Image (cartoon, rainbow, N blue to C red; front, top):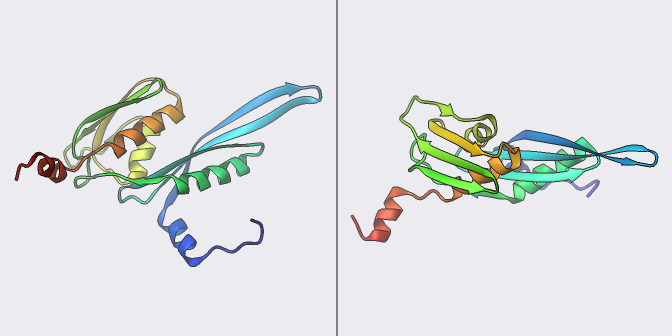
Length: 166
């Protein structure tokens, strides 16, 4: 990997996404010579137009964990449905112990959410939404639950077409 140059396509992909380090965890293991530390990083990327990615990686150094996490996030980019500045419908989703409820809000409301859920929604480009996070406050589970909820959103027109309603 060392010495390789990025192609123009890779540079374009890198420039269109905004990256955010959401959470860094330090873990220590006591060994004969003292303590051995390892780090895990939770990274979010988003373009503000309905595409987001999340990456979680572990390494012995913080910078390596962040680098590995951002690479994982770029591989894990998904798009979701939006209706103007909000989401098309209300949805409640759970992931492990975390449960997240997302509710559309009228224009001008803003993003009413906890810190981890707020970061995902803002990077995704949602401007007006009301959310509630219940259960676990584990950052990884909250982000995964929000991610799962956003990928399950459906467009109103597509749903009506499936039902045969014009």
